[in-house]
Length: 142
Image (cartoon, rainbow, N blue to C red):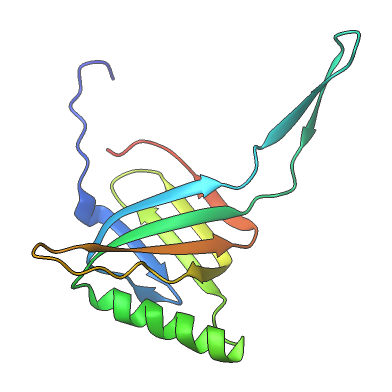
């Protein structure tokens, strides 16, 4: 594979929350809340590792100021804030031109985006926390 040209196409990235495809996004970032393995080193140098059972993530989604998905996500956030019901929904991120896939049966919006207006367009940053991961594969795009 050393001499082959690889291509990344942003339009082949699909993000859904509550079964609704999110549009008008700029970037998405997935960060594990804990390492897969923790290490302990004894006083004599003996090393042990323990697997973390925390397979939750923080997901940050940057949306265009004009994205209709911002309105959808804020409606879910407000309803969840007022009732505590219906705000925990499936979150799916898939790179259709590669192998990267993330899926959580439970995710929720944790923070209202900062609000700013200026002469130029601004973006909205929506933060999610997740339950345990049902699928987390990271790989290249074709």
